[in-house]
Image (tube, rainbow over all chains, first blue to last red; front, side, top):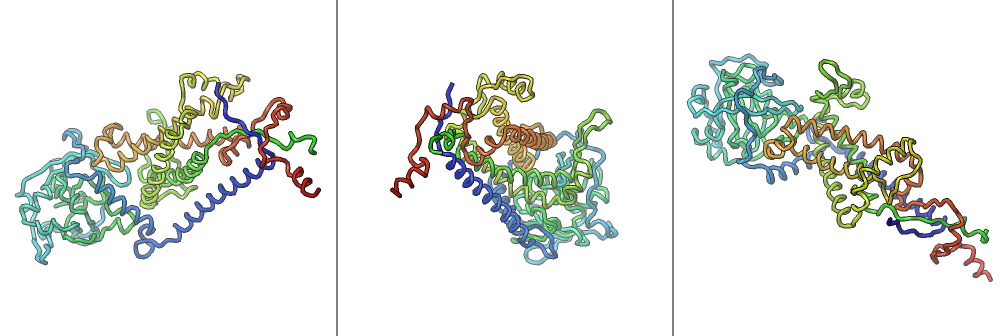
Length: 256
Length: 253
C-alpha cells in the first residue's frame, strides 16, 4: 500500500507553521466579517429604506443580463398541460389594485402610444382578436404553483392588430390597474413571447373580479407578481417602468 | 537537552494541499449564506413535512425555529442574497472539482472498488464495535464516499436550483428533475442533507482530535508512532531545522 511522504521537522517548525496558518485562517474570517458588515452598511436602492441593498441589486441586474442573454428565447416555452389537468380552485393571492369599486361599463383599456395618443379599447374590441388558450403551471414568487387554464389574445397579436410596432420596438412594457395602486414593468422580449396573453377567461368562463376581470396579463415566463390583474393602462418606455414589487426589493426581471 | 534531539523533532506528512484548504474554508461561509437565504425563501411556502397520512412527525419548520432565526417576511431579501451568493457557491464548486481533477487529488477522494466494503468496517470501528482500524491513506473509505457524495449533492443543488430558477427557459432541465414541484423538493432535501453532513462532520472532527483538525488549516499532520525510538534511527534532519543552540554556541566560540 502506498504511504504519504514523511518529513522530519523540528517541534519549533511545527508550532511556527501552525501559528502562521491559523493567523491566515483568522485573517480570512476577519475579511468575511468585514465584507458582511460592509454590505450591511450599503444603502437600499429604494426610497424610505425600501428595496434591496445596492450591491445586491447590481448583481441581480447583472443576472438579468446574463440569463436574458443566455437562456431566454421566444422558442423556449413553458410546459403546457391538457385542460383536464387544470385546477378548479384557483388560488387567490393578490388583491392589490382591485380594492376600488369597479364599473364594467366605463372600463377601457387605455393604451398610451409613443406619440402621446391614447387608444381606448373595450373588452369587445379585444375579444374580436384571435383567441389563444394556455394551460400552464402558474408559479408564484412565494414558491407555490398551480396548473391553470386561461384564454385571451396573444400580446404579440394585439400589437400587430393595433399597429403598435413603434411601441413594441421600445425596451419595456408598463401596465397598471385603473386606480394605479398596482403597476408592473416587463421587458419587451418577455411581453412579446408567444405565450404572453391579454387574458379575459379562466377555466372557459369570463375572469372573476378577484382574478382580474375584465382583462389581466398572463405571462408564463414570469412569476405571478408580473401577471397584473384588471389592466387599466398600458404604456411603453425605453427605461424601466415603475414596478410595485421591485420597489419592495424583488428582482425587476423576475423571469422564469 | 542536546542529548535528546528526538524530543525536538517530529515527523509530519503533507495531507491537504493549500488549494483544498482554501476551498474548504471559503465554502463554509458561502454555504452558510446559501442555506440561510434559502430558509428566507422557503418560509414563504413552507409546505414540506415528514409524516404519514394525517400524522405529521416533523414539520419544516416549526414556528419557534423561524422566530429564533428571524426568518419570517424576508422573501425578497432571501432571494437577493441567494441569487448573489449562488455565483460564489458555483465558482468555488467548479474550481474545486477542476483542481482535484488536474492535481490528481481525486485519487485520494473518489471511492474505489474496496471502499464500499471498507466503509462498513469504518462504521463498525466508529461505533466501537470493532477495534481494528480500517486502512486509509488521506481519507478512509467512509470519508471517500462522504466527500464524493457531497460534491454530487453540490452539482445536484446547482442543477435543481437552475431548474426552479428558470423553469420556462430551461424546461428540459426542469423535466429532468421530475417537474417544477419535484425539483424544488430535491433542492430542499439536498439542503437538509448538507445540514446532516455538517453535524456528522463536526462530531467526527471533534472525535478525531486536534492533529486532524489542524491539518485542514496547516496542511500537515504529525505522525504518531507506537515506538518513539524510531525517531533516532532516522537522523535525516533538514539544515534549516537544526536545533538553534548548536549554531549559537559555535558563533560565540
